[in-house]
Image (cartoon, helix red, strand yellow):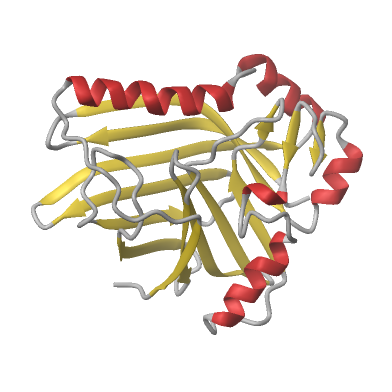
Length: 253
């Protein structure tokens, strides 16, 4: 089975205009979209498009209309003339826990056989908006990419910045590193790391006992950390553009 669980942590380090650091223990799912029906049938506490202790809903991703996610990914790969021979697609995300989830970042890994050929970075904000950055992959092992920020995420962050992505093809270890920069240097770094565990009833049950309200904690922590930034003197910036879903194809810079 290609699907698995990653137990690890998320960190954010903000360098300016105020310094701030956070670290939280989390777990993520890496789901092979071709295996999701099997996972639904074989693991009693996990469901696909149905309520359960853990669940995954198509409507939480992509066009967010409940349509088939694999079809959505493949149609966009064709649209941007990236690859028409995709054999499997994996998504890294948090699950719904007792019906609720907020995913600040979900990553789609797109493969032709064993070769990683494209990545979709699906970014959400707390206003129920979403932007997906699509990259063609040139190096199958270490992925390094850069693009201009196109989407309002934090009210304490300028739009005129760049994202620098560095990650490994997920295997025994998960490693996602994002550096946000402006003309004067690094503003923020964010990491998501984890150790691979079997996607099983046992491992899901262990994580539920350890983190029963993890997805609620994620959204609560976002607002709590925002309050701390405001108290430290960070400047609040209004969002000028409102959108529901958007995506862009990014050339590696």
